[in-house]
Image (tube, rainbow, N blue to C red; front, side, top):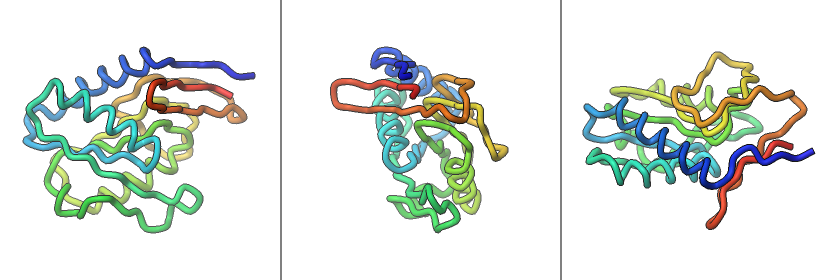
Length: 164
């Protein structure tokens, strides 16, 4: 069984809404770092950054976060040096919040850095968390079975979220 949960226009609407929520939260900051978890989380962060550039004078810096999803205890790495996100507002972004493992290890990494404000954002929140982590900004919440799989696809001309 396969269902399309969100299509391109719906995802674009959620990206825009999340961008406005981030702007409202960080309106007093000079710079906000969007730290996208490698691959789809980073693509989602880039799309949010594009929307933020349209609506805010706040400087937006993109950062890719590399977490070993098989062994998340491995060292977390970022595409920019720690000095570039210290003492700034930061949003940790991923496409799907499933068990919370990836997001919690990402949060743990950034807790060692002094930040002005720290929030999380996801496109899909699955409500199956093993860890006490939540998304401050989310596109959609889904209550699914553990056997079901959410796939987020960001292609050049089309975006969709599929439930398998």
